[in-house]
Image 1 (cartoon, rainbow, N blue to C red):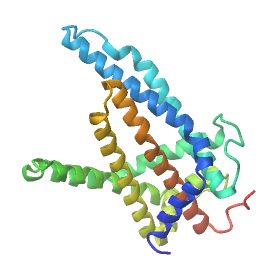
Image 2: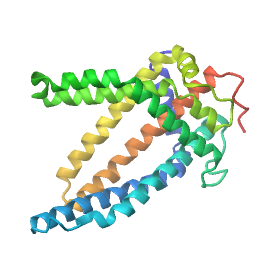
Image 3: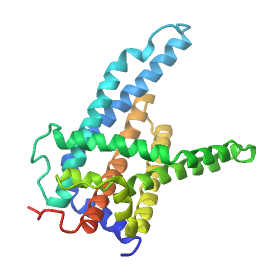
Image 4: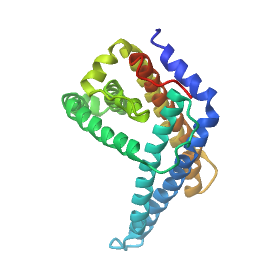
Length: 266
């Protein structure tokens, strides 16, 4: 397998099944746009209160419960979407075939997410300290682009480590036997180059999304609210596409590494 084949195949797969991806992801997209509007409104309202000399005012804090509720809703919907998407990839199961409410499978997915995040964060502490030390040096601290490269390098390393230990997710999605993270790391060793290229592409797409959103928020001929919300509305599909590609690629690696453990497609 060419180091680029997994990435290109996964990207083409998502584009070829865009109807299913859209049916699954539209609700998360709407949530992202609403959250963007509320965030901009809250920041602007707080700024107005401070400018008016009313620093003690709650400003946009009244929206905190709503924002938290939307964040929780987004996390739950994201779990359900991830499970549905990987079942579609591995089993060709129709999106939302098992309903929209999270069940045991989704909560296991969530618990494994926490476990993977904790282990990876702890394992990456030396790398974080090293990059932090480099970023703190006077020569590098004066160079904004080097700091940006170091930040995104850290993102790439954390994502790569997470992907290598994440075969538990497609296994959970299809109710197959789950292996531990160390076993997943060993099983993905033959795909390490493919996964590294995949992570670099996902990080690049994240950079494109970030820079494009920043640019649009500055140049669109609308008011501050409309500019910011429009920027998110235009660029959020890039992030959703990246997530679909990453989950699909992980499912493909799982199917190849765990031959005989994936049920026949429906």
